Length: 199
Image 1 (cartoon, rainbow, N blue to C red):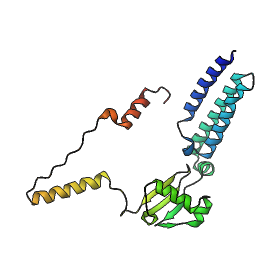
Image 2: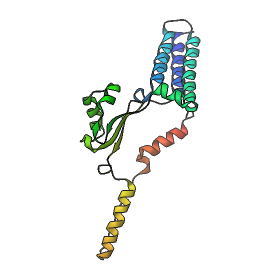
Image 3: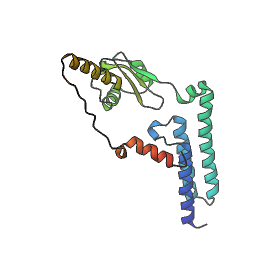
């Protein structure tokens, strides 16, 4: 088989295998998924060195099948999930850094502060809980005093302002800027997902 045809088949097979495995980015993958993806990448490069393209695609499919099997096993056996993925580690509780858990997470105070700044939080004392999730991301629960306003909070505030306006005999009007649905990134992503046969 000509090398250009092998390259095309390899490219198509790699795309299909990676799509079957899911759309996780490396930063949100679990340890077992990263190991499988590294193994898959190594297997898919092998045809460039060896003669048999189909064996490499077959081994890649087995690796993906193993990863998907592990995911399903974790759903049905929660203890296995804790063993494979790990559990969240509480790094901050009521505005205080838990240095023992920080060591367990192998993270420095500076790295924790960097991640908190990335979430646009300026003061650790504003955080009720911060956890290092199994995915490696930082989960944050803000103190209610510093938490962002929800839509319900804003609606309650509007009602209070309208009540005050009615008692003062003053009309209160709110203008909501209209948004173009074609520019809404979430609607675009939803439409693309509906059109994608592999989803």
